[in-house]
Amino acid sequence: MTTYRFKARVSKKGIIRVPVGSHLLDKDVEVVLVKHDDATSKEVSAASFIDKWAGFLPDTDPEDARYNYLAEKYK
Image 1 (spheres, one colour):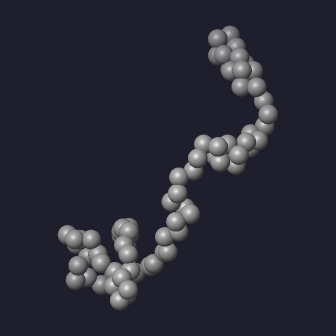
Image 2 (tube, rainbow, N blue to C red; image 1 turned 30 degrees about the vertical axis):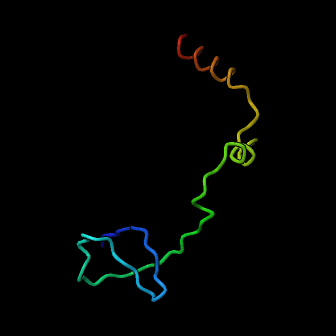
């Protein structure tokens, strides 16, 4: 089974239009509807990203890791 994904709007009459030129026209299909949530499509600001992910990694100095890596590499 092949899956196709496209965005569509359900009209007030309950009609969903398949994109023009689709090879699905006049074929039997199974329809699964997923409501588009506006909250998932909005852009994330840099400040909100930092607030969310700050402290996710352990508090280590990246310079130490870089020094140890290079020291091992060029022994």
